[in-house]
Picture: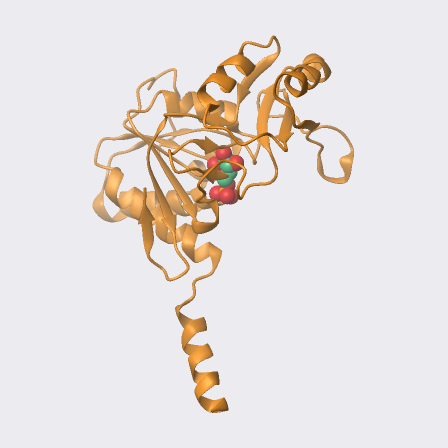
Length: 248
Ligand code: ABF
């Protein structure tokens, strides 16, 4: 009996993938299905995008693809340079064929929370210039409603002098709590690639009306951008524990 149980658990373990494997299969599939020769490609930020860039580089080398890559952050720029891909910019390529990016949470309507890594503004700008935004993630990011799984809150990038009034206004208008994101060791606030602060909106109420709430938040003076991406993503790929990829 014991031997049988041990063999079953070994078999079970060997079919389980790590989170890194799940990120990788999702990223590889998205790049294989959505990137074609002569494309201008938006490169997102975060740990899942690292695998997408790896796959882009493999395909450029093997298939001799001619691609231009537009970064969404300092990290993305470094990845493009490291893999010897062609680095572009929006000034020269304001229209992209596709943008491949990660997310913190994806709900059943493909509404996204992004910006856990602090790069939401440039990510949204680049995604808005792309014909298609494709999301890559592991299975832990796939939820029914925003906030079901991701507990760090919705990031809101703000002009530094306005963080207290914006915090008070959003808490009064919609409830929840806005917390200034601090750097590691709490030595000071996180400063984004654009010189702004980030407020993380925690304990917000569940709603189906993100479009309206997002529009109202964006009207508050000092708000630069929110990490809510509504109606932008074309498709999401979620790497699963068994090594397969779920498409949504
Ligand atoms: C970016 O990186 C962000 O918008 C999101 O916050 C994060 C996802 O990172 P990871 O792939 O490491 O989970 O895409």
